[in-house]
Image (cartoon, rainbow, N blue to C red; front, side, top):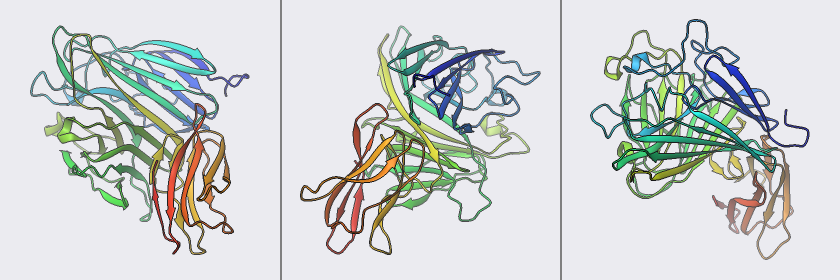
Length: 427
């Protein structure tokens, strides 16, 4: 639990791979393993785990199993020690030349030790993880994890720095692994949801076919859905709006990040989804990769950036966690919508919002009407939103919610016509 004064608590524990560092914000805890490539190995909400970890390498205490030797390693993909969790790599990936990252495995950025330091200020805690200097890519990676007290969100700030003597061109690539077994319920909603930007770029591009291509569906206008499925492969999303959401059994993890104009790796992909399922034999065309579990990867990418010697580029990824309250239709800085506000049979406007901070969900209507309080928000708890039926809803409405760091932000705007039909759009 959090410290008595409400600040984020920091715990450090030795282990065979160096140490585990846990940031505890109360309901939300995040645990990193600096010695395992600077990974996050655990993200929990009220004790429920969100990340996938390899049960053949780590025990429940995040320690290596007997006979498993952590440490820098290289070789073909068949030799990769995939611990699981969340990590950062450079893109593009490939084995054709020095402009591609030939991993995993990789002895510095993926499996090498990261230096760690903790900063605490105003009740918040920041864990800074810094890789060694990688001679193959010319990069040093930094991962800054920031938790605020009482919040169910955290920020992962990524930075790559060119430590080589010549220019290098790379993109930041963050990879989050989650359990991805197909649902036994045909009407299940488990899988990955992604928002579209409407940029005119392609919605999807096929990237890797291990055993096939992941199936992509339309979940709602402007929202794509990749259900959990028995496939090994990857799909890219050039038209990403800068958010992904993974809905698993009973829980949802969302990510939000900036998208930019300009060149991106993997045929312009701003986001990617990789899926794998258990196989009996390795895949020769993927370096002998032999998946043993159902795993899904939610991947956020930054733009390709030409870095002069000593120059850096950054990308922030905002994470939020909460319950599986339904298909995710929008992600905001204050929370996510598991069902945007819609007109129900009784004519009222209703939706489901999951906030990251405590406070009130308020609505401001047309003609200077006083604000309405639609709900009292608890971090990481679904709030069923209904506009009161005794209000005249015709016109423009703006709903606001509290931010984890203070202040409020619009989370949806509604334009409701005289016929009761409405058009929601995000802030």
